Image 1: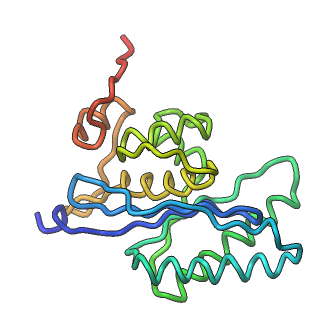
Image 2 (image 1 turned 45 degrees about the vertical axis):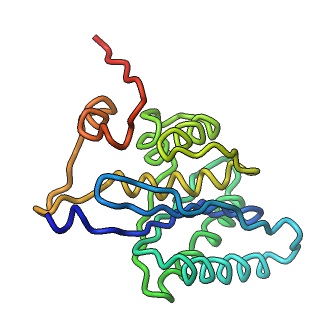
Length: 195
């Protein structure tokens, strides 16, 4: 019972070398509240190492400000351009190093896992993820960049991966079973059950 009532702060990061998105949530039992979301822009920097320095420094500042219990981060995905993958991997590694320098636990999620946990569809668009997050966390303002809601999605994804007090992870057979067990988290959402 004590585990279920514990509060924890989760920070999510969507790493990038042009724009890094982040979101911070407070989890209180079965309720989740939005604390902050935003972006760190690096488009004005030409030097790739200065970009990495900015990622590290800003991540440390965010950790010092919000004091997260865990940092959830999106894993780089393989595309057609290996150079982009390498740059994203560096950005992710620097954000992880910043968290570890502050003794914050780190968990990584694939983009597909994040989208699946938020929308029920691993192929959802950024706009669909943002719309679902607005409903789940009851906020109206649309962030300037979808990178901010992507960072927030990583934090919410981690929140959905709760470990029960018995030490065994709760698993769901699909979106419908998750919604059935978590009515307070998805209040007001209609679920279409396939028959």
